[in-house]
Image (cartoon, rainbow, N blue to C red):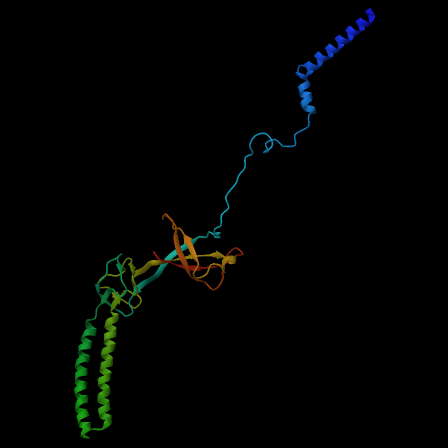
Length: 274
C-alpha cells in the first residue's frame, strides 16, 4: 500500500511539473511564442498591400478629352514687307528736299523736287506753237471748204496741231518724273543727297521700308513640307520682346532648298500684321 501511494504521488508530481513546463512555454519564458508564430500559417497578403500593413502610395491623373498639339520649333528671320532705295528715273539737279529723315510717309508723298525750269520754258514755247498751229489749221479749213487749198495741205496743218499737243504731253510727263514720290507707305531712313546735288538716273536718294505687316522666313524639315502651307497658323517669339505672336503662312517656296546635312527644306513666308 505504501509503495502504491508513493508511485501515485510521484505520478502527480510529474503531472504537475509537465503542467508548469507547458505554462512557461506558452508564456514565452522558454521561447514558445516565436515558435508558435513560426509554425502558424503564413499570410498570403504581401506587406504594404491593401490587405497587409499600412497604405499603398499610388499616382493617378484625370483623363479628359481635348485637342492634341503637334508642333516643331525652328529658327527664323524677319524682314520688311516692302523695302526699296528710292532713286531718280531722270537726270537733274535737286531743287528742294521735301522730306525729313526717319519720318513715316504715305504712298504718293513728294520727297524730292528736281529742277524743272527748262521744261517749264519749253512748255510755254509749245503752248505758243500750239495756238499758232490751231489758227493755221482753222484758216486752211476755211479755204478748203471754198476749195482754196488741197485736202493734203489742210491735213498737214491738223497733224501739226496734234504733234504739238503730243510734245506738250511728253513735256508734262518729264516734269512729273522730276517730282520723286514715295512708291508705298513706310518709314524713311537717312538721306544720301543734298539740295543742289546732281542726280543721275539710278542715283540713291533714301531708303524706304514698310514694316507693317512684316515677313518671317524660316525653314522646316522635308517631312513637314506638306503640313506647313498657305493658311497654316504659327506662333513665334522675337528676341527682346515679351510674349508670343501669331501669324499666318502666306506662301512657300515651290522647291526644296539643299542644306549641308542630308535634309531638305522649304522656306515658308509669313505675313505678320502688327
